[in-house]
Image (cartoon, rainbow, N blue to C red):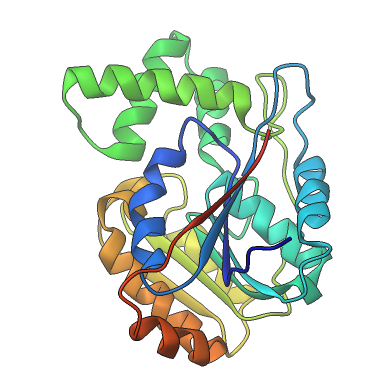
Length: 255
């Protein structure tokens, strides 16, 4: 592995990675950020374990521990990896990840499918309003298609037949959990449940708005909080970054 980086941003949803882009670009102004993507094919069984194993294979030969970060399902993968391979992780940053990690937007979708006798498209339209707020009709149509695709591509183990639960628990390295106060998926109660697992050096931060994809709508506000969290754990890199006008982002994909 010839390229070096400080931060590894995970993405397990090719169709939704566009919503990470503004925040990743902001962080890349201060830190060396690499992006690792997990692409699950239609013929693969949904498995977080497989994603974690592939991530370990990627980081196995990397000499330094990294700041690991991810939103939603990608954050769930980051959490699982940090719990299994703590020596590889300098700090963990989770966005819109509940203390019950299985509480993703996919779980909310399938719960509604079980509860209401309405069509898949109607529930996806409801999901768009919940996750992004009210949007113009043409934007809503595009977001419905994106969420529909994410249901196929995500390694989530939820289905119409069964909603799964994961073991709760924290990590040994410093951890930051970010959320939005009007996120219907990881609502304030789900976010504050993390208090049962936090260490003195850990941090919970909430933004008052932005719904589930708050980091897309407010990348600078979220980015400043994350940088403040990283600074005590990586002061030298941040000092060097402050003197640099630009730092490139490394894109690393798993196809």
